Image 1: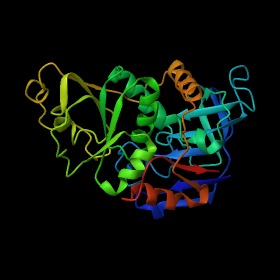
Image 2 (image 1 turned 45 degrees about the vertical axis):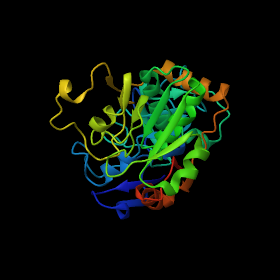
Image 3 (image 1 turned 90 degrees about the horizontal axis):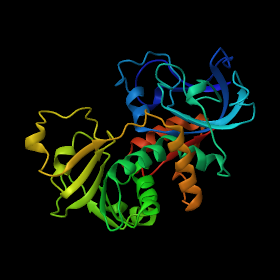
Image 4 (image 1 turned 90 degrees about the vertical axis):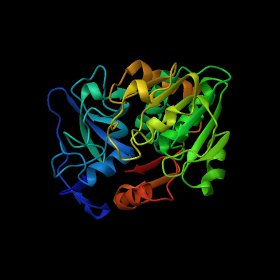
Length: 316
């Protein structure tokens, strides 16, 4: 099979399009013919060598969509069943979705029934699941004002679309470049605000803030909450993994709340609820860019560039 192999950390040039043996099933694992996969910033971090637990060579990819090609659980995962898979150390502890076939633990495979195209379906698992889970934690109510910090990211765009389906809310997206304002508005945001050097140059306050830049800007985001407001720290786009010198009583304004959502805690009922929401509201989940597997280097270059916007998908 064809696959993208990373033999050592480095830039996009280490993403080697090559031929490797197709995996064979083993007890508790099934083989997926991968039709598509989303590309994620965490995979760029891993490719760069910023994931110390990952050993090389490795086939990256923390998510994939496709059909069961060979199974060890014919009842739940029959051959031909459409599935999504993401997280669970996929592409990190074992080879992931950057290949034509992937061997995945059965408990990490989730059957889905959907008429979405492969490119649209590939945009959903990690990105829309993360957005949906974080929005649940924000406890959206009609009339809420919400800020998505890091609005141009895939999760940011997904959050704007899902939020409008979940409640009657006003959604503002932050961006480091107001040149992307029209893209944000077209993607479903109601308003746009500039995010400059980790600071929001506005006195505006919000009921709910989805924090996708992460620890680098969490303390500042907390200062933009209305009373009883909530910040959900979900992303790490800022490249900082933890809060530094964060004393809660000092940093969290009185009667406001800080929560988080980790997409690694996968709940199959939440997956089904997400797909139902997408179907019921006819949400446009189409990716902004679609590449072929042999063009994975270009996909990584685009996602890491200042030009990137929304979700990037690579089809087999």
